[in-house]
Length: 341
Ligand SMILES: *[C@@H]1O[C@H](CO)[C@@H](O)[C@H](O)[C@H]1NC(C)=O
Ligand SMILES: *[C@@H]1O[C@H](CO)[C@@H](O)[C@H](O)[C@H]1NC(C)=O
Image (cartoon, rainbow, N blue to C red; front, side):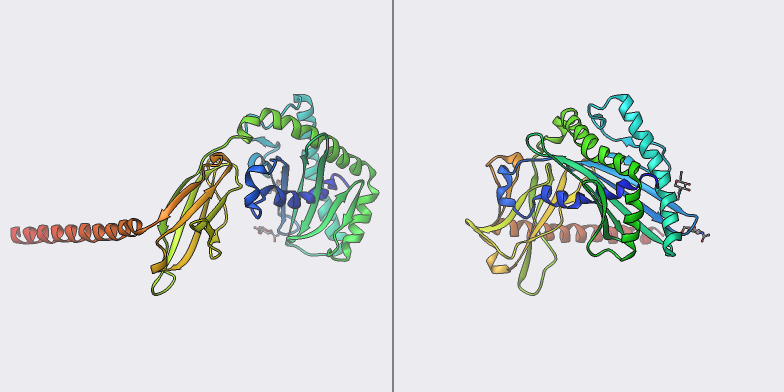
């Protein structure tokens, strides 16, 4: 069995969740920022002859690596992606990963025969590490089958996940017999990964630690019902990802505030939409408040007041006027045209 150690990398999701920290937004400015390296492998096996494996890698929130099935090498997407790795070690790693990818496909096909299981299926492997303060680091490697956690690498061996199907025990036993692969995985996870991440944090520091201020604006959404208004607060173009946005009345947070998903822009910044469903008469005096590390303690506060409603009414009126005007113009032209004929 070749390079199945990668399956161990599945620890990533926990670190991922921790680093997003969006559930504890009040602690925004104080929370220390870590930049875990998270690599994701996605392997689809459609049938006994068709398969593809693609890889992606992030440092913090920024994607720095990609590895498509049709490429022989991992592609560095950022000028700082190689970190402080020597070309020699970088080449050695490319070589190891290339070997891993082809033996992974072969090994999985062997497992399918051994277990008498069936196609199609999908395997995901998540692996990486995070350098914490001081000299400590945490590494992880997890593997999922059909979207469910089945195995991880813990310390020195492969361990079946608590809810994994019974055949996983057999797979782990076979994998754990392969001492060479286990040693390679340990080397990659516990030596190379933290060392690599330290280098990347040096070379990529200015981009990783940049602060980009959000823009914010208000609009009204589709009406939630008779006599009600959906107030929408848009916050766009910020980096890093943690942000706190709340509908307020004075200093009081409005518990009905609904936060959407934080969505990516193509330039690596983020967008968030936060709504509040209110009775039309109660909208006045509400405000949308935005806290973000780039703003220091200068929160953005936008008021939903009568003038805002007026702007909407006026723009609807203007729209109707323009529409009516163009219709009248078209109608006149048509008459002129018909008269000429
Ligand atoms: C295998 O799956 C691929 C992709 O779905 C399909 O195009 C191909 O015809 C399949 N081959 C066989 C032998 O079933
Ligand atoms: C993925 O790459 C492998 C190895 O290079 C190749 O055999 C396979 O056909 C590729 N799969 C697809 C769907 O292109």
